[in-house]
Image 1 (cartoon, rainbow, N blue to C red):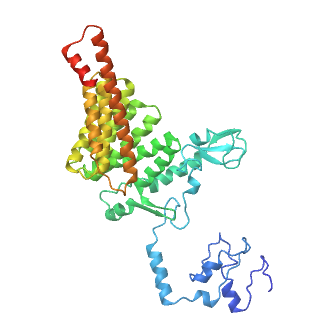
Image 2 (cartoon, helix red, strand yellow; image 1 turned 120 degrees about the horizontal axis):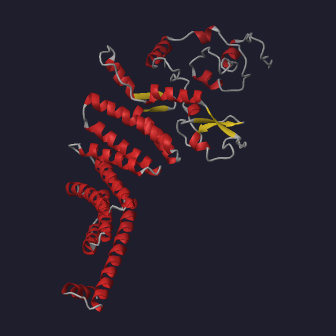
Image 3 (cartoon, rainbow, N blue to C red; image 1 turned 60 degrees about the vertical axis):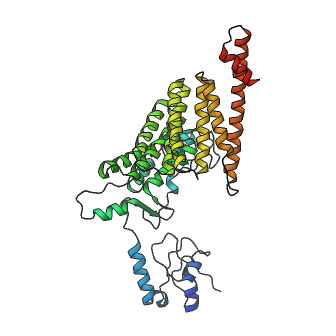
Length: 420
């Protein structure tokens, strides 16, 4: 076989070999098209000189059947319009705009010197050596140009577009604004941005997560102003605000976290019809506010929020007795309220709530298809029993101390008789 020189542009004369090697000599960066048949696609990835500019143009490859022609027209029709920012669906991937450490879109792009690898500022600040190449990091420089590219991508393809009110293509803009379809990206815009926020949050890049979630909150609020308080939008906003509260709490900003959690509770409480997911998000937000109040030392406020969460869960369980996971959550809420009651000196009330939780879990029947729920039931039950026994022992000990000091009352003597 005669080798083909990379600088020679002429093709071999035999038709068989020309059709076979049609995809072998094309540069992967060339703009010339290749045939759509299966053999050319297979041969395209085989070894060829990567900088060769030659292209095959025999009659067989240029002649298409009517079916193939119709298929090409259909493919062209289904392809989206050209993106004004340059992120077309055929060639663009978000990899170059992502941080290798947090796996999310770059935030505060920073370039390592001297290796020039780029990461989020918060991510790379934890390293002395480049995590990609291992080179010593002498200093970190901001990359404003790349960050501007990331911001343009978010504005053009990750945010929920605001349709023009009097536009002739308003319906097209509304439908087109909802879904992003790229080679490695096909998600609702808001969901994509939340995914990026959760990736950053998981990697402890809190400021990046807060930034993405704040954009989501702004867009959902904008939709609420235009479309009214729909259940779907209120539910979405409540969930995003709760996640934003988690970010603030992780950053040590308790006051901002409480504000976001309270906003989440406000929007979720507006919904006339509540699903299980809404009940879960609402009760968790109430508990998180209670947790923050507990850390502040405000036990009365803590008990108030814990009790509201308990009431929400009990009301749901009353109307949905076949939801074992929610019954487990009720038992957890009983334990949280009981613990605060004990801290406030209401030991009898605390013991009663622990006992109520124990009875609830003992009567709960789970099928064998949910081993995770059974494991959780056993764990919560063991905790409640241990807490109840501890409170009982503390009550007996206090009663004995009072009795031995000569200040016993009829009630304390009765308590001692009951516990011995």
